[in-house]
Length: 175
Image (cartoon, rainbow, N blue to C red; front, side):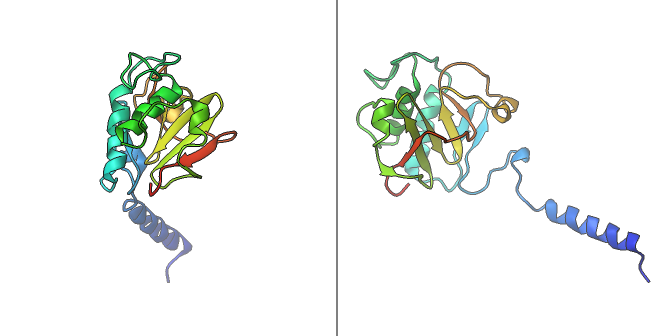
């Protein structure tokens, strides 16, 4: 007759075997629809729509630029970017806007609520972008991003989700 110890060991082995089959972010894998960060740049997931890929590509082009108040407002191509200039640049890269918008203007852009792939979070004085599960922001830095090579500093950088308290969520149609 099996002992309780044998049942416990069998259960532990079974759970360990099942855990090996699950995808894990720690191993650098991403679930469908989730981008990942590699060397400070976002890598779109294989199932990302073309518009999402273009937004990520555009954001990657400025992901090491410095912060500059008003940067990206007079023209999309600039030497530095503030929050809304960086978000505007990325959205423009995806063909989603024609002209840069300030944070307050992004509060009424697109459709109300969160999108499946792209969401702009805005309030009067700050805005950031969530694309395929990653945050593109000029402010808040998180420890998880730092462990993956995202250096703290000013300017647009990729990171992970942050609190949305006080922000209005907006998204493009069908994304």
